[in-house]
Amino acid sequence: MDSPSPLDRILRTTTLISFFPALGLLIPYGIVSNTVFPALGLVPAFFSAILGLLSLMANFRWSQLALYMDTFLAISILSILLPFWVLNAGSRQWWNSAGVVMLGTYGTVPLLMNFWIHAFFVVRHLFKMCETFTLTRTCPNCRTNIRAGFVPSITRLSAEKPRHSCESEAQYQPLNASKYDDDARVSSEAGTLYRPSMDTLGSSETVVKLI
Image 1 (cartoon, one colour):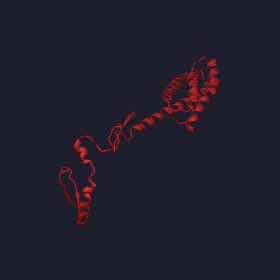
Image 2: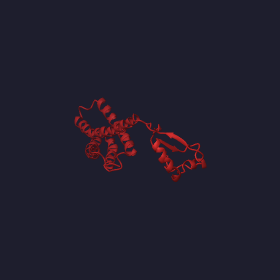
Image 3: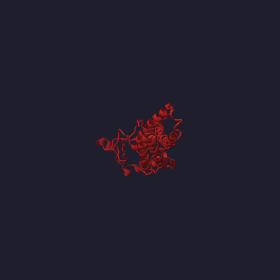
Image 4: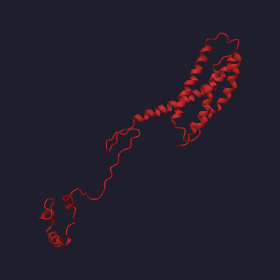
């Protein structure tokens, strides 16, 4: 398969690098605040880094596993960020611990970046699937319905003469050149040509007017 595009490389590298600042910000925040949100986001962030490393290799960009992992990681990160935002918005003690809240907020930035990157890959794949539905699925020549994994049958046409019966065989017998040389010479002067009829071959001759 093709190697990843420059845009894919940048985005996958971002998911790989963003794990380290998330690790340095979310662990201290979890220790100070005694909460698992959003420090729990390090789990999907770790798998995002692994997926980013694998996606930088060829033969993995269009893998179905990458699509499933992008979908799962985007949902996982969002399910961790939403409780953190809701809890902080409803907390009345954030004035007394503004520094801790800022630490947790900065820690969510790498998670939010990973979410948008995974969502981008999922949405792009869905758009490509929608484009395939608009393509013509009927062969303009044979009117065969074309579908995924369909391999049309090919009928080989032979240039050899058919040999179904003795009558068909007789139709392909070459003319006796010595018999028709003199007649062809005389008939060409008069503008006519002697040609054996298909139904009276071997028994009589039919004159076909050319002029």
